Amino acid sequence: MKKVLKKKELLKAVAQCRSEGRKIVFTNGCFDLLHIGHVRYLARAKRLGDVLIVGLNSDSSVARIKPGRPVNADKARAEVLAALAAVDYVTVFSEPTPYRLIKAIKPDILVKGGDWKKEEIVGSDIAVQTFSLPFTRGASTTGIIGKILKLSS
Image 1: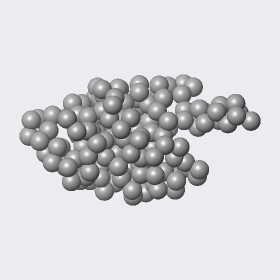
Image 2: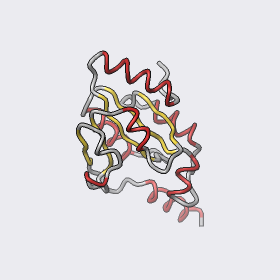
Image 3: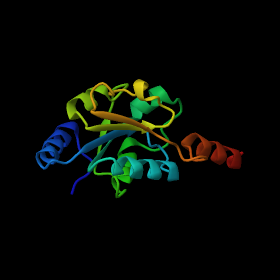
């Protein structure tokens, strides 16, 4: 099964899942250097429903949010995410936020990491339920990059 889909392909897959009565979970992010925090977060998100869709920030949208990033290109990040058992589909978006993508998907459940308050989560007005899941202490992409820079100096 192909897991990295363009928006049009994804919407067909979502329609099929809905026709089967499956609950759609959506999350989004940069997922630049995949680490244990990401893996645990995505596994928790998947357990909230039947199908987990990850909206992945494109390289240009990551660069707008996090100067000097991404470390890995969006095609590589998408492939790594798609290799995870918890992830059913990945789609790349270029807009500043995934609002239009969320509006098109209309997920049953919207999930973000613990640094987001539920009412601040983009798309919470569209999803049936919205959750902010806790972080894994000590696991962060910024922390990993900091350690690498410290080791290389």
